[in-house]
Image (cartoon, rainbow, N blue to C red; front, side):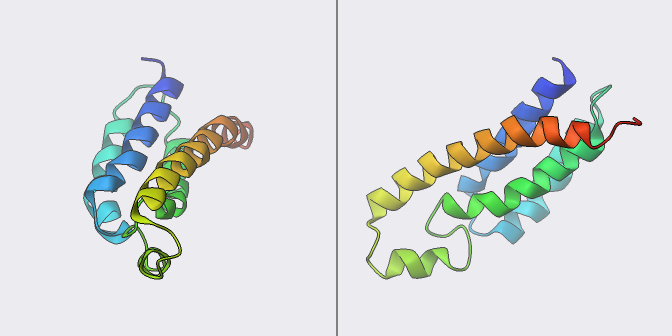
Length: 116
């Protein structure tokens, strides 16, 4: 696979595997080193861009589930957002945010590294 396609695939995997974790801290500690090491093993992959995309995605994962971040249980527990709506909107906005991160983030970060 081309390096940029590998970046998109690994960042997408990293983003959506958050559904299996109860916190961003646990997710980051368990998955980030493995995904980063996997990307580093791909010849020609810009590791600095890849690492930045991974950590930028951490801030976007808070929308995915009612237990994703500290404030999420408060929103969910208030009853203002139903369980079904939370999961549906989490998936919808998570996909939008991820597509934006990859679609804008990859070209932008590559443009910032002209001497590599």
